[in-house]
Length: 322
Image (tube, rainbow, N blue to C red; front, side):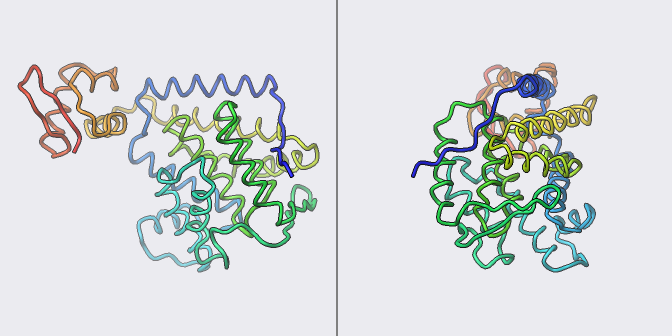
C-alpha cells in the first residue's frame, strides 16, 4: 500500500510568514548571529529543554534544568529528572544526527527516552490513542502501518522540493499524526523539526521555538486537532511558522546593540570556515562591521590563545583554526 503524507494548502498567511522569516534571517546574518553569544545560546537551550518537557507534563523549573545542566543535585521526581538529563544529552548531540535518516531519528529517540520506556529507539508495536483539544480522542494508525508510513515520511523529506521551513513543519505534524513511538512523540516531533531547520540555517540550533509553543500550548493542540479533523495540516503549518517568526524577532531584539568580543567573533569565523586556510580579508568577509585593524587584533589574539596557527609574513599571512 502506498502512503502519502497529509496535505496542506499555501495561504497568504503562510507566504507572508515565509517572507518575514527570510527577512529576519537576513538580519541575523547582518548582525553576525549565525551562532549567538555563548551565554544567549546557553539560556535558549535551557528554555528549549524546559519548555518542550513542560508541554509533556514535566514540572521541573528553568532553575532546576539549569542546575542539571551544570551537573548539580536537584530534588524532584526521579523520572522528571531523568527526562531532563536525557534531553540535555540529546540536544547537546543535535548536530550529530542525520536529519534525513530514519535510523538517526530512532537513535535520537533512544537517547531522549533512555530509562523512560521499555523500548527506546524502536517503533511501537501496539495500538495507541491521543487526547487532543477538548478531550477528543484521536486513534493513531495501526502499529502495522507505522513502519511504511515513516518510510513514506522520510521519502518526502528526501524527495520534496517544498521550502525547508514548510517541510520541517509538515514533518512535525505527520510524526504527531503517526505517533510512531509508544511515548516521546511530542518531544521528538519538536526536536526533529529543529534538526531539519538547522539544514536551512544554523541559527535554528539555538532558537527556542519550543518556548513559544509552550506559551501557546492550547493553540498548538488545537492546530493538531484541526489537522486530525480536516485531513490537512494547513492550520498547523501556519501556527508553527508564526512561532518561528516570533522566535527570530526575539533573538534579534535580545542581541541588538550587543558588542561581540574577539572571542565571539573568532567563534563565528570558526563555524563558517572550519579547518579551511584563510586570510585576514576572508576573516573580515564574515564580520562585515569590523575594521581591518580590529580583524588583525582578533587574529593575533587567536594565535596567542592557541586557537589559530599562522603561516607567511605580515602581508601574506594565512590562518587556520586548530
